[in-house]
Picture 1 (cartoon, rainbow, N blue to C red):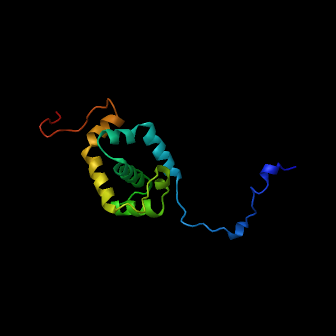
Picture 2 (picture 1 turned 180 degrees about the vertical axis):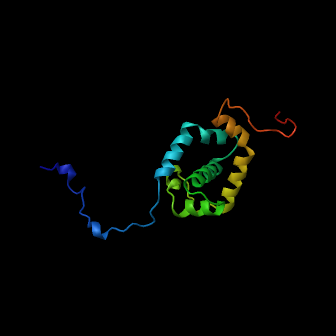
Picture 3 (picture 1 turned 90 degrees about the horizontal axis):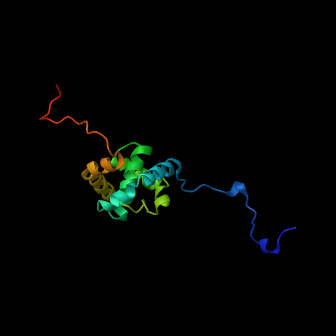
Amino acid sequence: MADPGEVGRYEEVDLDSLEMVRPRSVGVEHAALSVMRQCGFEEKLAELGLNRPQIAAAVGNIIGRMAHPGSGLATHAWLQQRSGLGELIGIDFEAMDLNRLYRASDALYKHREALQDHLLPGTVDLRIRRDHHAV
């Protein structure tokens, strides 16, 4: 017998009447975001002076390029039209200007060494410098 408090909590739904509107992917986004958070990536960006919208744009750039490789313009379209990343991090990528993504890419490049040191501590710099040729 149903609990009297349960009455009215259930509705019948005709499954044939359901329509998918604006479907979004979240699988790869969730996995990548989880790894970024385990590494403290967003906190490091904040330490480097990026604000919340800049951090969201940087995260969107990285995950977008990983999940759907392409140009900055293609990443922007993917974030706006196909990805559920915005819902996962609480940012409206549909309203985000393409230039914000470009500026976030510039910030990532500007801070690349600090980010590499944060993500890969203790690694050896194997870049060959022009003034130090290998023998």
